[in-house]
Image (cartoon, rainbow, N blue to C red; front, side):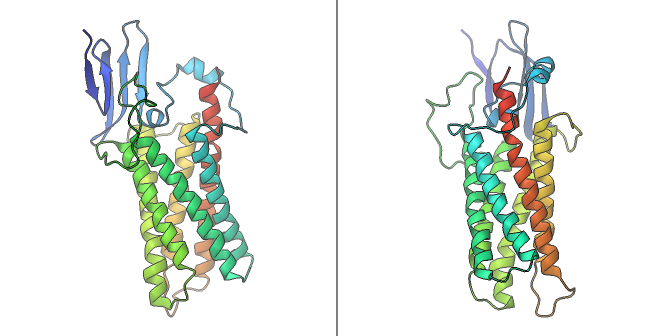
Length: 290
């Protein structure tokens, strides 16, 4: 009778020969087995949480042709990409209008707030996908009890998605509080602090995502679209963090035009997140095509 052996958070058949496991700190990010038929099964954290299955053979992966426009409304991955693209578009639009001198602050605030709602929807969708990832290589996730909230700190993908989800919630507070008529202290407490905290959460998420995709602290894999998605999002996180630093409010600003510079970095971050989300479509298409 076959039994299972747990590696990372996944149970593998004991008839599979374990070849290696790669860790970043305490987190398993890549697990390699040889199946009884001799084929090699490579499971990585990012692919597993996205339901992409084991890594394909290099020859098979090169034959797959990506599609750059995709209609997959029954796929959670597709919706995550769409929601992030809409949210990023709002942040980019609001930034461009501000930099162009648009004076209707209520409209600008509304644009950013709507964008933050889409970001939160995408962030929760990623988190929901992660906490419901299969724990067996042949499990039926559709028949498993669905989780809406969960605490799974032993997994790097949990921290990648959970920290970003928390960051999006902070952006909800940050953008909503901008509707209020506040003095500089109130702006710092109710607008800047959530912005800063949210940006830190985003940076934590982006950094852990690099660890997750690289299976170490850093790597260069310019031929892999999933690497580009991760790195572009990481750059976006850095831009948001710089924007938050520059957005600190003082009664007498130290430098002129800090708001313009802060908004410029918000625009850079928004563009990065839009591109990273858009690239999820060809990534999905590569997984579907042979």
